[in-house]
Image (cartoon, rainbow, N blue to C red):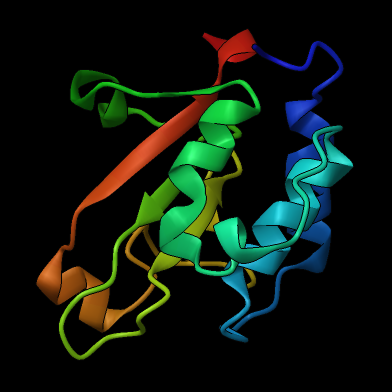
Length: 133
């Protein structure tokens, strides 16, 4: 069930204000803090230790998986959870769309966050807070 107090704009504003030019390898922490700034607190712990594991946690807090046809144009506040790839960071990656670009702990050029992800294109899912459908 969605948290009726979730504010996508506040989450995005927090993310934008704290993002760096380059990765700090702290994507999960930055996205979790942005979601908290929007009104949904995700407790730290094993379930969110790795970015690639955020899907079930997001669903538990009212986000729904976006169908592939809806991904042509991401919406502000969409969260992509990207799996790891052979030779890449075991944690995977998580990023939020700010209405113009994908942002995590840094301002990304695209959803993939770097050349390894771009080349390997590992599995991913995009989640949207259900109040924004």
